[in-house]
Length: 182
Image (tube, rainbow, N blue to C red; front, top):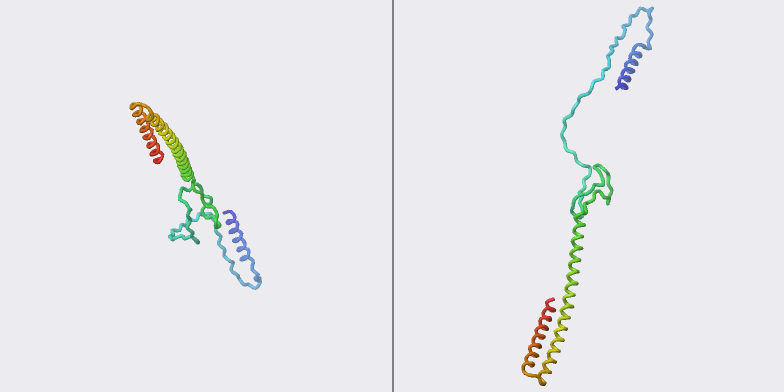
């Protein structure tokens, strides 16, 4: 405000000097009576300007663009601020990837579980194959005993040999059924 005050004072001083010094010469001897120029002075005051404007209107962007992410999620950080110019392909925000990491971990666990299930099924198949071979061997052994008993054994021995064959046949059938189910 001091600069404005100094400029106003300088302007007033120059005005007074120019008005007081004219280029026309007054001839005192000629008797013309020239009226002196009346100059008013004012003290410059520093007063605040209280002007308020109450306007209404609508602001519109010069250009509008719709932004979207390829995947949904929570915004973790914004890379630009309002009003910043951006180029095509620039990263303007990053999503929180915790949900996606959790989904990957769950999918990995599911894969591991499925692989363990496959290993278990293969072990069951091998066990069933072994049971079939064992039952087959039991049948062969029981038939040999039946054949031996038929060649000179008593009736009781023949009956026991037949029961052994039946048990071996039953074990074989069970092993085959388990193998097919597995």
